[in-house]
Image (cartoon, rainbow, N blue to C red; front, top):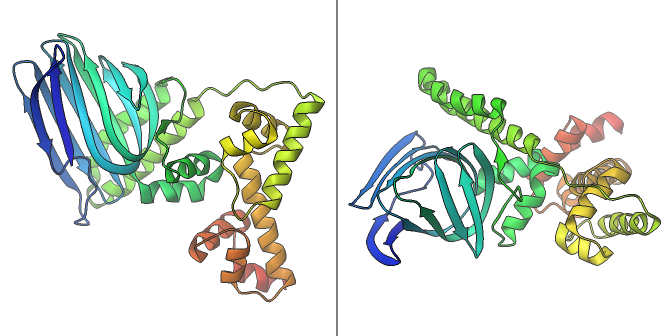
Length: 328
């Protein structure tokens, strides 16, 4: 459920409950929803096209006075790529303030998401598009592309809510084209869901590619020692690896330096290295022991055998059993 509370000149004016907003389809079919909020200060139109694992939300807002729209969510986990199509809004969430303007994009990773505050100026027209992914869909992305999404997925599971980019990223021409192509899905009939899912992944890939890279410090002996220490921790604690933040603290640096220098020294991201280390260990266990696939999964840090099999196939191109038969 979402609850909207509109305040004008710091006085609450209107409350509106949308019991079925920002959900995912439970019918197995595409579901459409439209909500309207109208009063003398504020006009809002919110459209949703929802499937089982993703939701496309279009918001159009016009304010007739300076106002604050407080949005209360019911505590969900999700990933949302947001793009401002028109106007400007000041956004406050968990004591962090942001400004969104036309052609800004960012990805919000939300854990147990609750309250947000949006401040609109008098006479401002505002339009925004959000591509909202369920926790299940986010997990599949983290499994398929661990170097891109596994750190963020892990932070969400630990209860963190954050933006992937420290500052909003300008929408590139390619991302703009990909977003515009979402509108052609209606012409594809039964293929519409598959088309939209592929386009959402394309939009995420284009956004990630446009994110600015962190400045990488020079390779001083002290920094190199810290990276070697970080690698040692990953190789000895791969069953329950620390988060990026915790790993950076343990080796005496910050996340930015850890990510930049680790990749510069070892040619991989921190979690990309961890993934490859687990897969190398799994290959050795499959070839040198008679342990079952479930046992190998557990010994390489995977709680679910299916997740291990999917990761192994992505790395080696075959299932664990096929790998064992071919190499045995």
